[in-house]
Image (cartoon, one colour):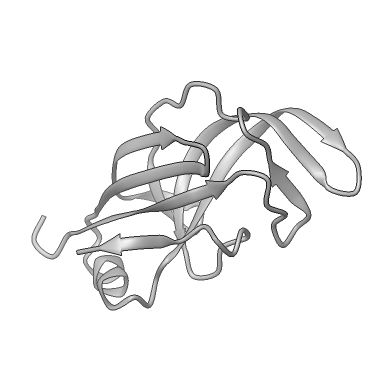
Length: 124
């Protein structure tokens, strides 16, 4: 795992409208199970998620990026966005699409997160 880098941040934030008009509501995740860490919602895992925790603010993740090029980008701060892949289980449509229950499928490192506040806040 030479070159790997640890990170932590919020992959989802509650009650914030994202760029697509979706809002993840508190309680949407229920019990979270381990999921893979991907890059841009594609392909093979690029590291591991060590902890997933739901708190009052959202879905907090901590993990390790093992792909050397992506780890270097995270270390430099050039790759700091986080995003979730999910299946909607309960949705309420209004001015926004409210995600009331979702099944978390994966967490991704992304250059531009759909939720602007979903970012790595600690790397190293």
